[in-house]
Amino acid sequence: MGMLVGFERLRIQKLKMTESKLTKDGEQFVIEGKPNQGGTVQAEISGLSKDPKVVSASNIAYYLSRKGVNKPKVEFELLDIPQSVETALLGRKETGNGVQLTGEDTEAPYCAITMESSDAQGNTALVGFFYGVFSKDGETMKTLEEGEDFTPENEKWTFTASANPSDDKTLKGQYMAKYAGDKEAAINEIYAKVLLKEAPAA
Image 1: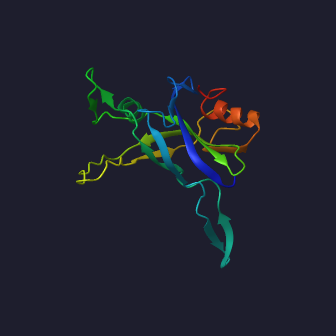
Image 2: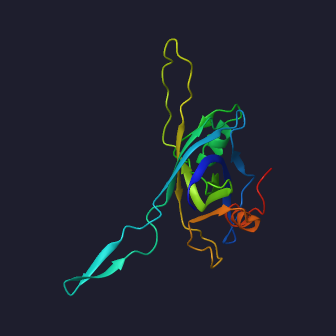
């Protein structure tokens, strides 16, 4: 994919399993810097390569085990995510008065995501994960320094990916899809196969 320039947008689609098939559960959440709707700061992807393991035989390194992935995840820094979105993505509850509840029955739903950037030539660059869950382990409160302007803190989120459970032989067991370029068919393929949508939301 080469160099990625910027982090413009994060699309999130909640998923549910219907008759052994993944389907959409509600509309997309789009985080793209609109006022009071949150913005993207950084995404760090890890765990895509399995640590090779040497298997010895006859006193030599006979075989190098290297198939598959490690533990794929995306660590995000996001800004000003609305509470309603946070509640939905973390599986929390909300009362009629808008009070968020977190407890022993909290269970994050499965989601698919795409992260949108550009390559060095200005083409669209997409990285998507088919299946996984979000977590957000804590909150931060910090004093206002006298005479200083308020600077908002980035929120740390983690998306832990899992293998695609699809019956599609091409997609089953896959974690990530990515593309950078100007081929509209490839861009739409990622939206269709990752977000289960033919085109991005308006």
